Image (tube, rainbow, N blue to C red):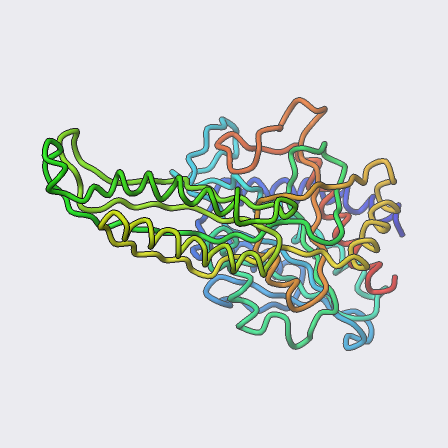
Length: 394
């Protein structure tokens, strides 16, 4: 089966490139993937695959049924949204939507899943069970499309026994893949703090409550959460990426806004750390006569790859690609809303290499010049379909 499936994936490559380039040219922001969802639906129509669209606005879920469909179900997931980044690449498929770009490779993920759908549809007489295809909106934006789809019942009727997802990885060359069992990616919480002071003339600071000075104390004080409150053996990152306030050199403003993120792997410590953020911020502000308004919406949990499911998928990848093309992955402080699925069912989130010869297509994700070696599409679609077939007992 391996050689036949590889040949079919190779033959599919022009179609994979066509789909990926179309999606790359027409990126859409989180929860606005209307044209993307319509494109996915049109490709599924060509394949004769039954689907439901409009789930949580733009989600598309399809089913490929083999013999004895009720025997077992596994799910394959791809995210569809793009980022608010102006693309700087100059190619025939550069983004046509100003200020929006598939800089995280979700165009690749969607194309690979469509390719896997085409291959699995060809093989549906050879497996028992059902493959659920999840084309998910809003991975890049809290609360994450995964959490919304789960609430809408995407993991029911039928319920998958395992779910698999892939992600581009420019640190590895195209034609390779990477796996990690157990804890893999961090949780992610967004922190929004408004510090309300009392504005006035910069030459008369005694008449004001300077929120800029207080903000500096808050940012410095919150570093204690990582350096003194956390277990040094538990990876934790607390970063403030935005500070906004003020109008002129001689004006003390009324308010300053801070925006940051907390990343960790321990869910108990995550809750404790966020409580420390609230307490320390409130107390520092109160000590200087300011008021703190703190908003920390529920973010993404840490991503845990089920060891048995992941080891099995890795062995399938070694069979399909060769052991030398399957790599170990390190822990990542980045986050993924695929983690929500793994709270409800066994999951495996893995990577596909996208660079070429160690020197091309090495820009990181979320970069305005991110691009891929399109050989990765063939690998991604072929491997995803092979994992699904083997997971169903082929």
